[in-house]
Image (cartoon, rainbow, N blue to C red):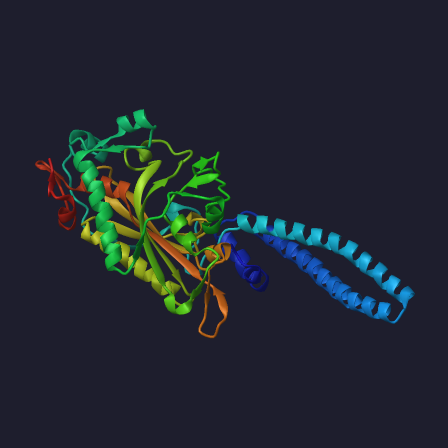
Length: 424
């Protein structure tokens, strides 16, 4: 979340940034934050003043008693009692203002960087780069859900039987392709210096608040009511929360972690042709890369992460494009975000397969994730993450783009992981 210092010292800049994200009533909400902070500070100052007076009077009472000045001692005791009664009210006012302030801060999104373009939605995103040849498929080319059925790779109907729509069952070479991609992505991340983590796939409420998934205004997280735990929508949540309430050493940054997990998203309100097959699922596999860095180096880290994802798509021989997201299409927590999309030749459309974001200090402030500088000062870290990569739409594009009369060709980089070079 935004820091009070950021809001009070750069008010106009914060409001402009929130308006770029089309945050409703930005001026009024920021004014309310400043008002609550002033109330909290005023109560705190009065409380501190009263406590100082109580401490002083307590010492004076002892001196009066020793000197036999009973009347003066009684007056001092009465004043202490008066101050303590006043302190109760001041403490209540301060606690209320603090709680209200925290509640409002949780509802305010991150402020986008200057280089984030203006815009309302996906149509306003800026194409930064396109690479790779879009394959020319014959007129009778099949979409991935038909290919999955033809070669018995994925059973969508069986998933409905076992669980419900959006929970496919991978079979045979389809399952082996999933495992191959996971291992390929993990090996590539490890070779790039990322430490592999195997975290839980359910988290507590504090973890959800730490990375900004809570409060869940869109109702996209699966909630285990009995235990008050949440199924993770991405490995970003448990991996970043490793560093919640931690003070790291500057010399150890950037920290680079990667993790494969299953991810769970309700995708409430999603329907229609664009969610068919693997295009949008409730459960899917993903490898995530996460970095904890200093403010001075985080933009360089972001560039390195973008290059890493680009390299994966090149090795998979998939045509892709990189989009710089506009303010209106960015996530709640991002300061800047780039999406990677691959071209699905049979569907004739672009499919998002990765988002790589820099959150600046927004998540770190929620997490209380800090680092100690060389001169022993404590500062908030910057956090970053990216999909490297999410499997469903990668699989969709691989199946569709590589279909031939003989079967489906496997990219060379994946053959050692799959153990086969064709699906037929």
